[in-house]
Every structure is written in C-alpha cells, then in structure tokens.
Length: 633
Image (cartoon, rainbow, N blue to C red):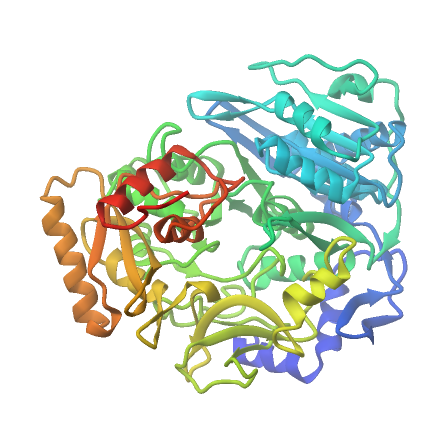
C-alpha cells in the first residue's frame, strides 16, 4: 500500500493518468476524449467528450453489482420517532418512478428543478431523479426565507419546484408552503408547476393548476430510464452567499464530481463498500450533497439521513445512539455539533450508555476545529478525530488526514496535509509564496482537480472576478493561514478575519484556540472591532459549559489573562464577554461578520441563514455593555 507521500507524488508526476485510473472504477456510456481540457484556461473541464449518468452510478450500477438488498439509506428521525431502511433496489425503483413524474411534468435534460425539502428520503429521491433524466437540481435549505428563495428562483429559472408542506425542528413545525408561495410571488421567474410532499404533521393547501401532490404526480406514469449526459454537463447548482448579497450558483459537473467523491470515500474517509457512513449535515448544504447522497452511494456504502440535532433530540447522547444502533463506522460533522454535546455533557457520561464498538473515526469540517474540542472527542471516543478543510466550491476535501491511505500524525490546529489533486500555496499581497510559518492568503494553483466548481451558474464573469483575478494562476479560497515546514496547513481565519492591531496582523482563530482551552468554555468567537488608536481591537465572546457556577467576571478576567500570556500584549486583548449563545447559520457557522458590523455601528442585514434572529439582540446588548455598538443600525 502506497504511503500518502507516494500517492501525492504519483499524482504530481501524472495528474491526468492519476484521475483516469480513478475514473475506471465507474461506469461510462462513452469514454473521454481528454482527461483535462485546458483549451479555455483558466476555465478547465474534466473528462471532456465522455458520457455518463450519476444516478446510474449511484444506484443501477450497485444493484447490478449485487448490492440490491443492501441498505442504501437509513432514515433516522428522532423528531418523528421514525427509523426506516431503504435498499439500493428500492431506492433505484423509487428514483426511476419519481423521474417519470418529473418527465410527465415536462422536465427534460438541462432543465432546472429547485428542491425545497427537509431531511426526508424523498429529498434524496428528488435529487437522484433529476440526475437520472439529466435535469439540473438546485437544493435550497428548507425553511429559507421567501425573499432568499425568490433570488434563487430568479437565478436558476427552474421549470419545476419540488417542496414539502413542512419541516420539523425540536418542539416546532416549520411551515414551508407559505414561504414557497411567497417566494414564487416575489420572483420574476415563475415555475410551470410544483410537486408538494404532504407531511402528516402539517398538510398544506395546493394551488389548482400549479401544485400537484407528490403521490398523485406519480400515479400512472412510467418509470424513467437513465439519460446519458456529458461528463461536463451540470449535475447541480448550489447557492452560496455572495459579498454583494446576490447568491453565487456553484456549478458541479457530472463526470469529475463522481470520480472525486468516489476516490475520497475510500482514500480520505477510509470506508469500504458495504460499511455505514454518516454525515450529520443537511442535504441543503454541500456536505449533504457530497457525503449524504452522492459520495456514499457511488462508493456502495449505507448512508444515514438524520432528521434531528446533536442535542435535544432527546439529549446529548443522540449521536452515540445513532452510531450504536446503525453500526456507523465513520461520522462526519461540524465542530459546533461537538461543542454543543460537550457543553451539555462535559464529561461525556452518556457515551457509556451505548456500544460504539464498530465506530472507527470522527471527521470534523465546516469551521475551524479548535484543539480543545478535538482532544475532548479523542479522550472520550478513543478513535482518530480528523479535522479536514474544504469549501462549497471544491465539493470535497482540499486538506485532510487521509485515513484510507495512511493515518498521519495529528497536529492540533491543522487539518493536516494537501490531498492529491490540489496544489496549495500561501501567498502575500504581491502574489508571491511566503516562507513556512508565515500567515498569508491560501490559494489553490490551477487547474483545480475533478469535483471542484468549473464556473458559476450563467455567470462566468462572476466566477473569474470572485475566484481567479486576485491571484492570477490561482483559485482564491478567501481563507488565511500558514503552512509549516512539514507541509501541514493551518487555516486560521477567513481573510477578512485577519485583524490589524497597531500594524500587527493577527489571527482571530489563534485567539479562539486560546479561549477554547479554558476549562469552563464550551465555544467562543473573536472578532476585530474598529479602534481609532490601534486600527482594530479583538473582542471575545464565550459560551460556558452547562453547570458552571463560578463568578462570570472572574472567568472573563482569566480569559483576558490567557490571551495576554499565550499571544502577548501585542494582541491588545482586553475584553471577553460571556453570552448565552453565539449567532450561527443553520449549518453551524458563527456569524462573525455580522457581529463585527454591529460592534462597529455599520449597517447590516439579517442573514437569511441565521438559526435564531433573537440571538443578535442578545449580542447587541452584550456589545453595548462592553462599550461597543452604541450606534448599531
């Protein structure tokens, strides 16, 4: 078995040969003319000339290989008390039938379909049904505000929208249909129709002539066969926030996407066909696309579709219950999920209630994984805990510890090393590589590997300006950090989270590492606020572990002292505020940019993805109490 360094060297020596070999594991209706088409550089295409079908490779190929009776998906919904196993054969048949329903509604190859659904099996069915007939799906996180959904409708111009009557949060039902109706009313583009999944906990009224029931749409229609599409045709569009407030439609192609994901399942995550893999995310985010639906099915795994939370459904042992009940070997989730578990159950006493004997590894991504959280998980789970780093735009990991190739030593604070396919460099403002251990802008040398975005939806100019212009010859990640002499990358912050304190460039992520190490702290965030004398000053917010009864003022003073001791007076860190909660997106990212605007008294908009808007009122009060946000709008 080749080592990581040998594998990376093999890719460097022959990138096209490396990916051509990886592609042989999949089914192609027609092989490629060129592995890498660089004729329009810096716009690149992978496997040009090839024809394939992603849904065929996920389902029909697996049934033909003898996996028909194996579970493809396990739907586990603690909020409804439901557990259901769906075999590869059943899922293939369900997808073919719904693909027939889409076709009966006039959806054809190249048409767009927006999917506005909760974490239910029908969401995966709708995604795969689109792929089966060559339609392009765009999943919008269920419960998104009407105006945000409307902007996506106007950009994608879907022929059809597939939605559910409602979604579920612990203790409440979220009605989707009023949001959908409002979005269609706001949007300039009007879809030809909607297919609505009626959930029994809240059924909705259907608009005659536009809306059709999920079951009724499938009655009397013939199942659809797989339609061959070009490897370079889009599989989906997934919208991510743009700096102008206009969402960016990240395009994912069919060929390169399935090659990269299939390779990553075995080589990065270390899971073998037939094993159970769980990405505790949502299908509305890129993790759900890559590692709930497509990656595991391409690889012949069983995927968990979990409609629940890390805590509160019913308690902080929810994850351990799912792992034990379904024989999960590998879990992938966000660090914030583990911070929530740690906050509720600091000594992890609930782990003792479950048999985690088959569990092998925990992967964390989506935000910086602070060393304290990683070490807490290592201590209590007694398995490798792997931080790794990637983006919506890349679709699969850039930097990781590749368990399927070789488990490398862990360096806390680093997601480890660069994966084959990527060339990562840290650049200064003049576009020059910086020495080891020097903070700069993290960039990926072009071409990007298979699976990464080839462009933005109908916006190549926006793709070039957002990602390619600042560092010519590179893709701009908009993350800042450094690489050490061993090739381990440290992703410290978004580039706008590097703060300048009296001329010193400092990472807020480095300060967060220090604060997170305090024994009473469950999670934290550091922002830079404007200061007339020093340019910017750091300000810390911390959430304490459950059960902490010590004096809050004393804890805040200890935190300030820790920063002074470990980073130094240069940080000018003088204020740490204990708060009940941090404002986050539904995917768990802390809204540091919004917090900074409130602190600086700048105008700000309520983020469409915010988990609970009330939290921002609490943060504003905390900022005012600390002497900031006096004129916040």
